[in-house]
Length: 181
Ligand SMILES: Cc1cc2nc3c(=O)[nH]c(=O)nc-3n(C[C@H](O)[C@H](O)[C@H](O)COP(=O)(O)O)c2cc1C
Image (tube, rainbow, N blue to C red):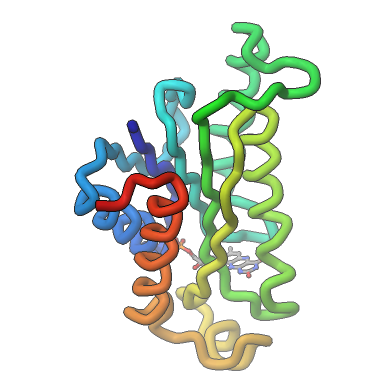
């Protein structure tokens, strides 16, 4: 079972989540790579059996580095013929989408489009998306959005409690796939 964690992070909130997922996977003895996406990232996702893709939410969507990566990858699989009409399910290929978000205006509904955007990417490739993880993250650089938004005072988040929830969810996924030792 090969695992990949791909993520973007501007102010390290999403990175904290990605690294905690990595800890759990490593502790379970799995083969895991953790890669921060940049404008040159090119990866054959079909080499992996379980792929995590995470992004901060910006203006309701994933950040540009993630969206550009997705568009490049889709264009590649169009050329190779892997992107097929009806997107047949690839047995044994699983994905999880995760994000961190501050929800200052309307709460979690600001993060939903970002996650659904990433989810649709995997579904096009035939991956089964097992879950969507939404973690609150301080709006770094904006005191107002971190203290008086729809989610209240979110300074310091993701905090240890948030990261413990991620640990627990990661273990739950491994149990679901019967990989947890
Ligand atoms: C330019 C910018 C735009 C943002 N837009 C949104 C948004 O539309 N909705 C939201 O919930 N959070 C928004 N946020 C907050 C971030 O999603 C949140 O702070 C996230 O945890 C940052 O993750 P990172 O530290 O990994 O970059 C925005 C942050 C920035 C800097």
